[in-house]
Length: 331
Image 1 (cartoon, rainbow, N blue to C red):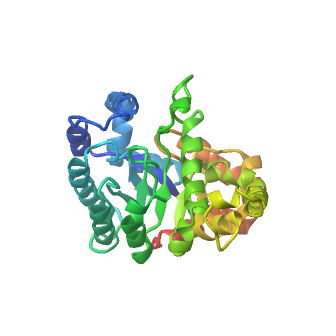
Image 2: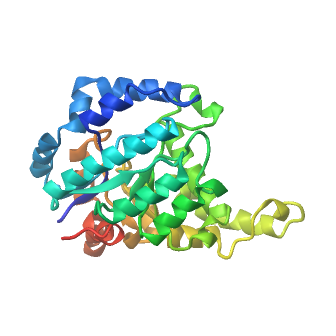
């Protein structure tokens, strides 16, 4: 079984040295305090930066390839000028890593949505000269979401250059998610990324950019569980006086957009029942394997992939074939 994992985080020492010396946007201070504490813990920092050790671990577990991406929340908390420069430098470093290990590493680059025009130009460079495989955006940027008009250049560039957009979670911009330990992976992450995906669907953004490919982790950030009800309530509201005026007209049903424009990954959800629901909802050709390294245990994730009851076609698609198609990975 060829194993390609597609949500595998890393950082470079150069990036961490520069980024940790920068101011962050108002409202992002608490999240960045936590992330900088995590990133300066010696063992965790080594797991982010020591790619030789990661290759040894991959070899020991039978993992063929990892699609690397910058540790969340990337460059999005920083002032625009700093973020644009940080993104370019990191993407140069990531491309060099991929060139050194083309059979073992692919790369999801980072961009600065704070400057949509610069992000669009960087996407052209990412998918052209740098030869990387897509981009990762860590949900909101300063509480703003990609369906808002100012981000149209970024989305247009992603569509034009066939750059899949991995929509990764970060701590929610909404105050109620900040209490009781909820901002991060316990609850806030999936709620935040699911909210962002639903904004893209319900806003009509995917009518304007029908060729976009969007990737959601955690087996779809709970959207597959709700999809039938989302369609039902959307159809009801569209026929209800007053409610219809609050919603953009959509050419398709919400579930049609989800199946057409989204691909989901197993990151952090090693649960055969949830995977079974996802398979029935979107099919194996829209599901990819991911570990969410270094936040999840690679051995547990790979064992889940190997031993969960699946057909040969399903296991082949999830383990590598869908990822190779979505991210144009050579094998």
